[in-house]
Image 1 (spheres, helix red, strand yellow):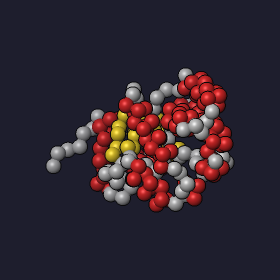
Image 2 (cartoon, rainbow, N blue to C red):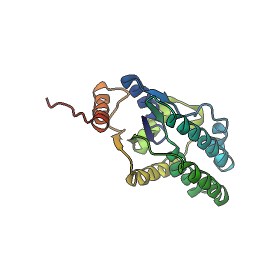
Image 3 (cartoon, helix red, strand yellow):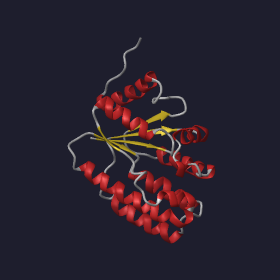
Image 4 (cartoon, rainbow, N blue to C red):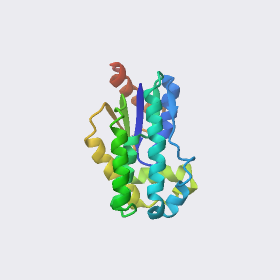
Length: 207
């Protein structure tokens, strides 16, 4: 089974992936952020490094999806291949950071890949406002993220909402501003109750 967690930068995807993997005994697959050799250069000069960075992520994510499809384990994935192509690349293109030529090349490659990929068994989307994202980014203190522009995050958020509005698969939406699953066990219980209902048809008891 394939469980996927989607959400903007700083929304809490990695935290939730870790918590759910421990709670259900699922195998976690984390986003390859720290291993991306282009990322620091990208945040310093987005226009120069946007295409390289996105191709790196797309390659890694496609390899992950293929491995997940061949696995007998239940795997929970921190960020999906769909976000790379439907959120991050279009945002860079819209903001003039990726040329028409590069974006068309990228999109053609993604369309070929996605024809071989099925939707996750469950998509969990963490919805967050910009102030909450900024606070989370500052809290975790990754040096290369401190130069992220607000208009970049705002563009991503708008694309996330558009993508989720048309998503056709099994979906749970979490209010990342108010459901503090990383700090509050009761809030984490709310998340697991929703997952149990979706995956196993279990509903929390009243009282």
